[in-house]
Length: 280
Image (cartoon, rainbow, N blue to C red; front, top):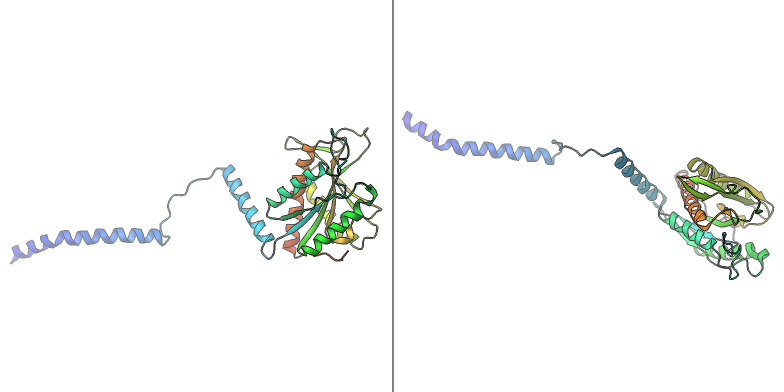
């Protein structure tokens, strides 16, 4: 009887061992999938970590801006005939290089998840003095068709005397020459002067914080520059005819896009985004 019992245990032994091994394998696999087992994680370089963080922040900003409705800006040029040197100061057909600067701005801000509507009408020819009035009519129509527009941006270039210092309107950012930016607020026929100024000052502050040396400040001009059309009006002069090239102005346009996007993001977070306050 003792020998038969030993043989029985010898016969059953391998089966029990197999069952025990299988249970161990199943338990290990279960622990892995239940999160009890942590595999070794690859180490990111500091450069890669910064890149990944920047990409994540950019995505979060876009989600914040677009969580309810697309954030849209309207871009135009009251003085559409403006060129940069070495071309003639104004294009006879009214389609100056300033339109390319506006297109660069629209491309840059669209990369940040903000929709840009670019008006390309001719407003300052043949009568230069009618430019702001004619531009305002087109802007008013665009606002009526797109009531979710959160800001209107009028992009110009300056026309300073030729004897200005060559770097008066130029800054160096990351080794690249860029056109400096001057902001203008009009105080004629403008019930939105205070809100225009607040938006402009916010843009100037952001510009100085993000790109030191690029701002030429804010100037109040005694004329109507269509500030009445929206609370968030930004009139920006990117560089100067004698002092800057088209390449430098385009680089400045991308900087301005960074600044406007940052201001609109801040307004979105604070629930301050506004619609047009008056109908032209």
